[in-house]
Length: 167
Image 1 (cartoon, rainbow, N blue to C red):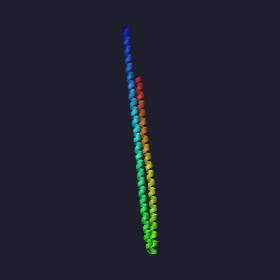
Image 2 (image 1 turned 90 degrees about the vertical axis):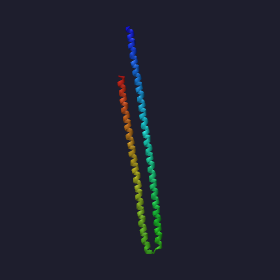
Image 3 (image 1 turned 180 degrees about the vertical axis):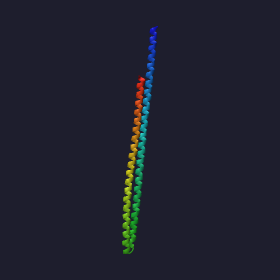
Image 4 (image 1 turned 30 degrees about the vertical axis):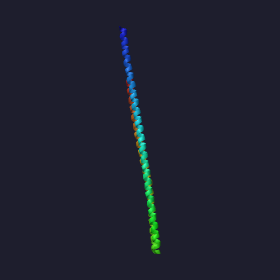
């Protein structure tokens, strides 16, 4: 009788151990799935941020091209105006011609100054876009680092829980 009780007791212990192992196995599966989902989400987020960064760069390039096009059109119009003015001056008498040439030179000087200023503005815009892109990349790295840190903390907690369960 005592032997049967011991066998039953051992069977009960084995069943409990088996249930514990099953629970641990399920917990590990859930943990791995959560970890996989988190990595997948982090990769998707990183991909999305890269796409947004590409779009931003594309838009910046497009805007820079449009600005350059407008600048060139303005330069062309201004040069055309300067040439027309110069032609008009040739038709006037010599005294007024000298005065008009002086005005044309001033206009041309202003045009060059405007071109220089516009070129400088375009450079500053490009620099600002690079700076903004660096800030975006910095923010992306912060987010990824934060997500990695959270994953590590979750891993640490899960390992601790697994150790506690094993005890």
